[in-house]
Image 1 (spheres, rainbow, N blue to C red):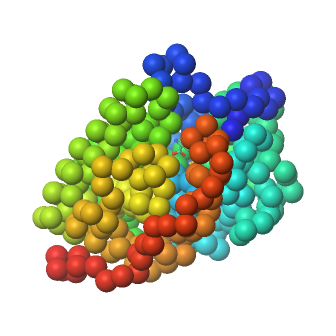
Image 2 (cartoon, protein in one colour):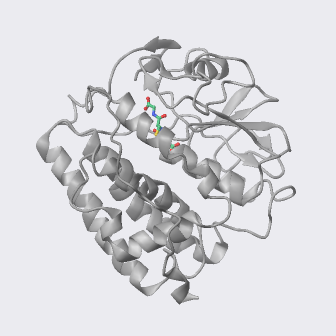
Image 3 (cartoon, rainbow, N blue to C red):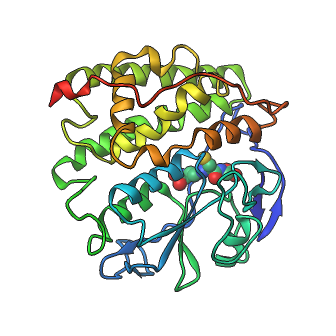
Length: 326
Ligand SMILES: N[C@@H](CCC(=O)N[C@@H](CS)C(=O)NCC(=O)O)C(=O)O
């Protein structure tokens, strides 16, 4: 763990000393948009035109935020249009690395050793965290975006000339409900598990823990009435929840101490999780080896021995009961 300060790598764990033991996630810094016509997105000055072969994703298979982008790339059938490199699961004192073992690909564009070199290639004096996912522009040699919630919107809309235009994960009619759902789930669940796991004071942990389970309880109720979060159509809100749910029992219950109950103990959420997992193409994006080894192996303040638990046994391929909604 560490970050870049004026383009130099600095090895330091998250500093929670100024926030009463609370983990506070920094906002992503690269916020440009790829658009169909190359016009800058609203409020931006630089434009990036959607073109096949021009863009590249750097992801970790362990990371729930990066995982969103892999799922949308897969569902929108953009695998031949947008290339991908996978970092190594271990995030140590140099941050994410391109060690090409265990299914990690290395950096196919530049042969870099570390992800932070991609950041300084884009901005030599960059200061901030070096996170995945990264959407890289091979033409302008720069980072377009390192914000997953925005990258998935670009993949959903900008590349329809080549991808599956019939699938819209952010349909006009549902935008209000999707935004509201995301606004509930992001702080309380997606980031809630991190706030619990990275807290360094008891009260910070407990308040995050309560947020996680209060919200999961609400979602469990919502999924009693309908197949997906916003009704009977799968949207980005579902995929954003999915990447947290699929990691929950294998990692967040133990490593992040979110152990009031498992997803397996929620009838609707667990069936819903399997329903989503079984959507064609999605299982291939889920790598429980990278997921478990990354978390348990990369956070020495939480798990100093780095031992990776053997369990639990999860079978996301088991039948689900969600087809009852039609
Ligand atoms: N808001 C970002 C968050 C990305 C993020 O925090 N990724 C984690 C991996 S799960 C990371 O790379 N962390 C490295 C660090 O914080 O140093 C997004 O959604 O894209």
